[in-house]
Length: 329
Image (cartoon, rainbow, N blue to C red; front, side, top):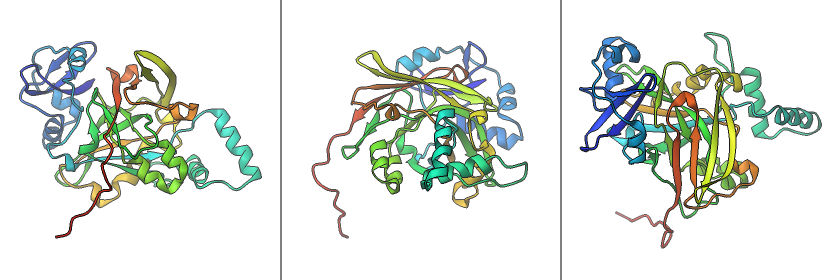
């Protein structure tokens, strides 16, 4: 079962539920967040809350996406209360990469990245009730940095690169008593500046302060243990790069529960009513294959488990005329 948000042809917001091929509107609710909070208040699961409601008219989600009417599958009326975050070095990658890592480990000191990766391999999937290794964590921004499906991902004038990261994102709402609730999962493009990150690992925080997109549909329930999708880069209507990506716990060095614990252990991230979108990482990106993107290129991240594909073009933001100056009061 999938949820999505869209704008109807008359301009009204709506929530749609798709169970199989057909999508129908959910009457008397305008946002996924509103639906989730209603389920929490009633002590029901999201599926039970949907089942308690009478479905409305059929809706063509593909047409809405083509028309630019698809919204993010979960948002917040105040964008400052939506948090975009993520964890890296969480996916196993190819066997050859791991073999190369082990061979180097015997001959030379490990980088901090490799040390953290090994921490995940050795302690990222603890037993029930236990806390595992702490992952790499980063902040991408708030709701102002969230680009709806189909909308451009803006690369700032000072960026050295504009690259996709095909990922799975967990989507969460915080209840009135501070309990995080996971609604489900969505395809995500954790857009980043890999050249800046490569220049100095301490610039990772800078490289992640870029927009991100997720959706168009939200998969309700558990994440499949093995997720296999395809990441593509289009230029002038032709594919210039294509590669499969893997996710799900079978392809990860950390369990989802461990990654969620190390995010929500902070009181800051358990504020009532807030929305969280947390990217779980990837082992696939075009930058690793020597691809340099250009404004106008189109990213596509697709996986049958998640419904409609996520597409976003790159847009170059206008250069700043001068350095940003802080005014004095």
